[in-house]
Length: 252
Image 1 (cartoon, helix red, strand yellow):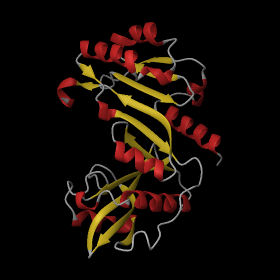
Image 2 (tube, rainbow, N blue to C red; image 1 turned 60 degrees about the vertical axis):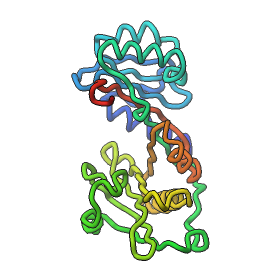
Image 3 (cartoon, rainbow, N blue to C red; image 1 turned 180 degrees about the vertical axis):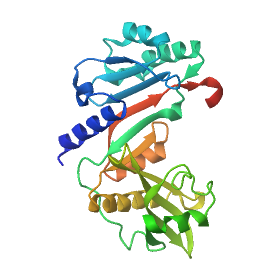
């Protein structure tokens, strides 16, 4: 796929995931939808250089229309516009925590190289196919590699890095958006961070995903500078922002 085809593919799959037509992100204006789910008080989705989609409870839908109809999607989650939105959500006992402004990255160009023996000579790497993942998960409790081996997800592929026989970092992926993407997660033990190991693992698992004919997706919070750096270093580009409002009591 070309860069533009990948972005169009992403827009189509995200639109399907919220029960809308694929052209919802091509309207040339912001789109406002009343939420039909009591658990979905407010959701915001924005692709770069595109309109924004608001899914909001009827209690604030009219307010969103009044305040954001003419505001470019790229500006809504920043500055005065975000402050106004945050204040409105708080009136209803909700907020968007900083760690739930998710940025999703796609590799729009094939620029990632393979791991080099010289660069990672102190580590050994092993691929765990889906059939072997159970034994990997049994070796570690949920907290050791909580990002890469989340017990609530079903991983389909993982790559581990070992030093002196001990696993010190894991990159994994799971099927997201009904298999539209293979979503990457990575974890490194604290004492092995800062050596480029996460970058190397993400580069390698990206290659493995593409070799299997799937599209890799890397998602991180906008406040996670280290993770954002990994995305940039491995050739991923930000494609869309997706954030939710939570009950204040749940997130504070």
